[in-house]
Image (cartoon, rainbow, N blue to C red; front, side):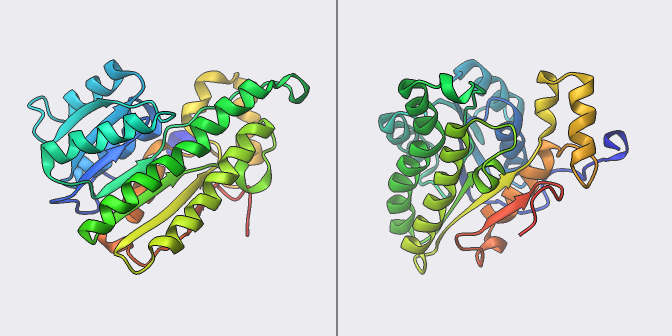
Length: 259
């Protein structure tokens, strides 16, 4: 079924005059989100722990650097978030949109997970969301406008069928942080929402043909989700037209988990 699915062109929402930071944007979902917002006329800070990957994406969007820049950002570091904010403010004046996309997963057998590995996954997937929301919520509130979108996971809703416990727990925590900051910021012009994706097509590179067929058979819609679909949903939540979403988690799992 995947071969018959096509996405419309990018840029369905207007981001003219808006400045966005996307974490983990050197590839995959983050790159797709950066392209979506840029196609809508927004300025995009492409951030990643891998600066070369971020630079490649930013250069492909705008070689001049006027509307797209690359930043090094390790989401475990509050100082990196501060530096990213300051760089965007210096370049464009303020930060209007933050998409917390960067994440990490390990499929270590449950009994083999060390406390150090547990902490690493929680730092990348959950604490990073807290650091980002804590920092940018105040910046956005000062300007009376902001959109924060957290990319979480189906595993954070149902415990995960193949995900490890630290990954599932960290993504569940990110969903709860989304709700907390959404309520904390309600009425300030700043919204905070989340997206919980199911199987994404970028995962195919790590799977065998047999595994791909099995996943497609388990998903009621019969296919993996394209990264562009997450980007389109992110664009809705990040746009001016998404202002009535407050603390929502959009389910994008092809029918695997219905609430």
